[in-house]
Amino acid sequence: MKKCEQVADFKEVRGGVTYARGFVANALSCGIKKPTATRLDLGLVYSTRPTTSAGTFTTNRVKAACVRVSKEHLSKGDIRAVVANSGNANACTGRDGMVVARKECNIVAKELGLESREVAVCSTGVIGLPMPMVRIEPRLPELCHDLSVKKGHDVASSIITSDTCEKEIAVHFKVGDKEVRIGSCCKGAGMICPNMATMICLICTDAAVSREALQELVNEGVERSFNRITIDGDMSTNDTCLVLANGASGVRLSPGRPGWKQFRAALHHVMLQQAWRIVRDGERITKFVTVKVKGAPTRTEAKLVAKGVANSSLVKSSWNGGDPNWGRIIHAVGYSGRRVREEKVDIDIAGLPACRGGMQTDTPSDDLRARVQADSFEVVINLNGGNEEYTVYTSDLSPEYVDFNRSEYAYWNQAKQDGLTK
Image (cartoon, rainbow, N blue to C red; front, side, top):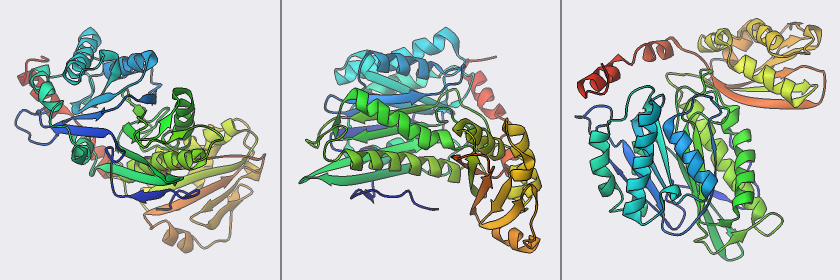
């Protein structure tokens, strides 16, 4: 996979969400999805110092209770602790879901000596099932103790669902003689077509940044990363990206001041790398495909075309079969944009010209087919109608994806045994 361009002096290192100074974590196994399960499924990240914070959330009109509560708390001030679980999304759970989300925040706040509004809550898992608080609530006080900088990886493990691996990244850079650190963990593998991102992403930094400036950077970074990915065309009810800055480095950053460009580049690098990790780990996918549209009359037009191609089941199926089917690509181009002229469309697949002026080129089909056998390639679509462009990162669609997503019956059966549903 190609790397994000690194501006100035930031460096990627081994680490995760507790890499930045002043952040500690813990994770436990509660058996949220299945009482006998031993995998970690409840995590907590906490800043030992006051923070400024920023975030973005799903724009799906159906929002999980945890999103509603976290969004409300962020609107009232800054977040110092985030409690997160896998195994249950706490989405479409009505008033009881809101009560549960608030209770989680209240318990964590009491244990850590915080106000409830200083705690955010994130959940991921099956939609529509009540949260099994009988197993979660007794463990929350324990979760808030024995916090450690060494447990960031445990939190990354506790939030994954259909993910095949933890998604962690850390970077650092110097401002004068002081070091600034950024660390992150995220999850996401299915239900990926963000507007804001389909995943949970937690990012912590020990820089001191104003709330307004941080929110602006987060909005910009999310637009360039998490909002540019799609696996299956489905936007989640639980999308959450939270960034906490606690100033433990002793470095105060602001636009136009020393270190700001490095910080902006480093933060956006973290977001883009995490976005790419999500696509790479898509449920049973085999290809990572960059779809770049250029020559569009407007950015909106470029975005429509890029997402139309990236979300086309026909196009994605052909990629899974190693078929360089530019006809499927141009058909998606045609229905996605409003001002596309067929006779102007050029398409390159994996660096080779496949279509010029809306017609097939003389590139040997065997050459094109050989290129798309790779696990990563780029499709460039030039509309030749303007100067705007847009890029989306996507995947193929496999038979295994369909098989993997055919049923969630086992989870509902367990909920029935728990007395949470009939």
